[in-house]
Image (cartoon, rainbow, N blue to C red; front, side, top):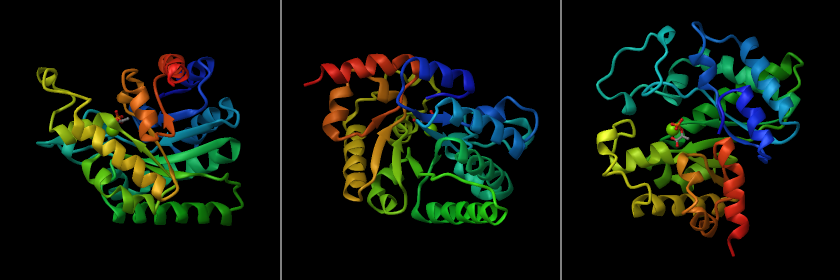
Amino acid sequence: NVGNVSDVMTALNNDAAGIGLFRSEFLYLEKDHYPTEEEQFQVYKTVAETMAGKKVIIRTLDIGADKQIDYFDMEPEENPAMGYRAIRICLDREDVFKTQLRALYRASAYGNIAIMYPMIISVDEVKKIKEISAHVRQELSEAGVPIGNVEEGIMIETPAAAIISDLLAEEVDFFSIGTNDLSQYTLAIDRQNPKLDTFFDPHHPAILRLLQMVADNAHKAGIWVGICGELGADLSLTETFIRMGMDELSVSPAMVLPVRQKIRETT
Ligand code: PEP
Ligand code: MG
């Protein structure tokens, strides 16, 4: 899990097999204007080239809730965690979404880029995203711009997405489970409120059951499934994740080797 080019180097130095979550929102957060297609393209291209053929999963813009950006001019909300955020903004602001997708597809010619969409709750959203994404690819190929072979996946980080993961699996190339948000929404515990830490149980059976359900539904449809939330690095669950059939664990660069060691020790 990384947010900039220097983190990508650290991941590589820790022998990561790829990048499971590149948080593209940092590109937007560090600027005082909408990052242009060219600005984004340069970053995604550098990341793809740095990883030299290893897979780089770039998550499209995930702001709102805990991540606010002035130039987006968002209205204050009563419940921002359940509000105008992530894919909801992208589907509402197609101009912003398309600029990012164009940059991603252009960069895909320089390495092994996959695209992942956050905060999905419905099949209709995914269909709409695929339509926009196909349109962007069409425009680029008509302009003679080379693009790579890009897997498109979604984050499973709402209970709704987990519960209909059988239907969603028919639409996408992979699932990556965002346990940070999935836990917050399943347990109804604000992940930002330290007062609730004593109530927060990331090993809650409700969460573990959802993870198993998502893994099973992914495999029934023949797609792969990974975990990219913090729980992926919880060494006390590594064996459980292997039993569940998780195909990939995405963790912070410093946790790559400890997780790998844990996997190797597991019989
Ligand atoms: C998650 O929700 O688990 C996740 C990986 O995304 P973020 O922490 O950025 O919300
Ligand atoms: Mg999330």
